[in-house]
Length: 277
Image (cartoon, rainbow, N blue to C red; front, side, top):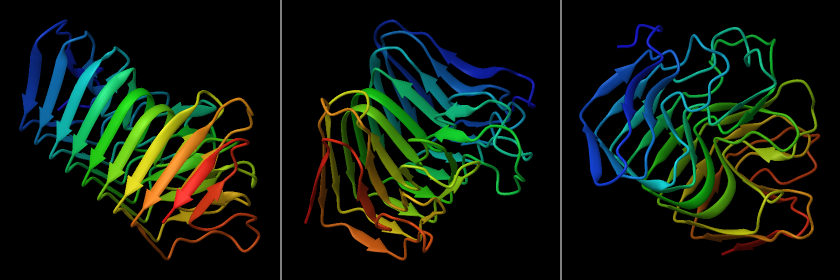
């Protein structure tokens, strides 16, 4: 228990070999529950990261942070209630990867839950307005998510931000995952190219993504050009983002009546493609 004072509860710095964390409950870190540094592999099994970073507005990766090239496996874990305070969206203009922030990482995530992260349910206006992923912000490498659940996470949308999971670049695969009741809030501007659940940003690099046997249900987006489930966004014509969707369920996802894109999937990338079957 970090008591909302301890900056980081676990710092893992192995340069080689494998480090493991198993059956820990980590709560109320002021900055990060776990900070990974070093090229060695990290395995996290059956851990819970709860209510971390809630007293600190300007933090990336409250539950987990890694910006070093390495392999990370997360299995049977829970990330719950890692939020940006109760007084709004924070004091900065953006927060990136509120719960789980990784860059240059090959990430395997199995049977892991993200529940109630991002903007606190009791938040009432004020502060910043943009969040790159209330649950995960992923940049570069490979992301393989299997049987993961994303439930009741809230993100702030401004420009091409938002998303429960926000992918900057890399190769990603989501299989048998659930996105349920996540919300995207257009905090200071009604126009927002984003989604409540899953966002791929084509403004950075060309990349490919696969979504199979997943369920997107009752996700909410309140912007005029923001999908509730999946969005492929970006304006740079030199980048190609390919999204393959197979055997998925879309149920009860909602956008405003003024919205100009579909409630389930929108492709707003200048050179993006979507293949849905």
